[in-house]
Amino acid sequence: MSTPRKGPLAGIKVVELAGIGPGPMCAMLLADLGATVIRVDRKQPVALGIERPLRFNTLLRNRGAIALDLKDPRAIEAVLELVEQADALVEGFRPGVTERLGLGPDVCLARNPRLAYGRLTGWGQDGPLAKTAGHDINYLALTGLLGAIGREGQPPTIPLNIVGDYAGGSLYMAVGLLAAILEARQSGQGQVVDAAIVDGAAHLATTFFGMVAGGIWRGERGTNLSDSGSHFYDCYECGDGGWVAVGPIEEKFFAVLLDKLGIDPRSMGPQMARDSWKPAKALLAAHFKTRTRDEWTALLQTSDACVSPVLGFHEAAQHPHLKARGTFLEIDGITQAGPAPRFSRTVPSVPTPPAAITPENTDRCLSDWLAPSRIETLREQGLID
Image (cartoon, rainbow, N blue to C red; front, top):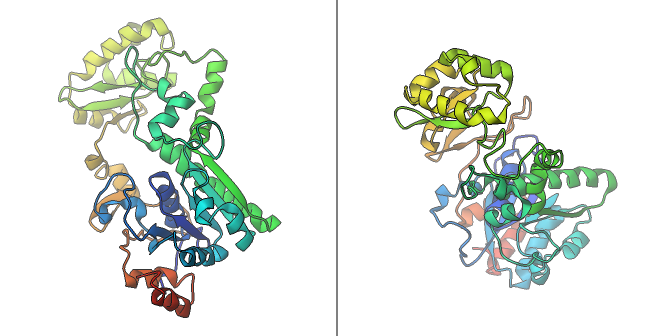
């Protein structure tokens, strides 16, 4: 048997049909919080995203995997046996693919009427673009988010694919699955959860759409309060080439910043007056050039000036605050973020590294789902190694 799961989702069982990016991230999140997740991979390796050695593909942590040939009807039946016991399934194929495989919602819900069937895609299950290819940059472009990110007079800035794929996709899929699981416990009925990255990303921008409608947010990039337009919400280069992030939006916090810097507030002009932003920014830029990043950090970080050093990935895990909280863990020699959020009572286990698909690992992860005799039958049939 595999090690018993710990965490608030212990007892929840999820089938993950192997995919890229957003799907694995969703499955990892559920597994991190205690769900028993089994990843159904392909017999023949398929290029899924950025190729790397398994131990560095950290989105695959904390769960076991089996390899099946989904063109074989017997393999499809094996997956459906897993589905019968699952609370949820998550897939990230284009619309219609799982139906052609024989694992579509109708088939799966017939085998398990309480199943939350999660479909995670970029464009969603319907609409003119539903069956076309796309990636994070495309989904953000269509929702208006990409056009809003960047500096004045510059092209849109491409953010890491955290905003669309993982925030707009993975997290919304996880919330949707959990909502459907809770509802099924009351109604006894499962349902399809259609998590489109365009929907999630647009939803994340709710406050900005409201500000646009109210005439508060300008359409030109880099001209607004929190998009690098203002002097009090921007990044400044320091004397050593490092950077600090400055964000004292509130008047009282901005006053702390000016006091710490020794700047006369009258030289900055009214904080919220847009016509004062550019000259004030030039003044702050010159000031921050006079010391190194770490010198500014020592002076400002523990005050209410809302100033932080801009750290690289390799530096973040060493920051005293993140070390004190244990935000990062080392798993199989690889530094990575631990489970989040935190729970006072049902504390999740420390994640396990990505598991290779071996006979031993296959037996271990299937033991949570199938009887030993059934596992042996699948092996005798050549369906699993």
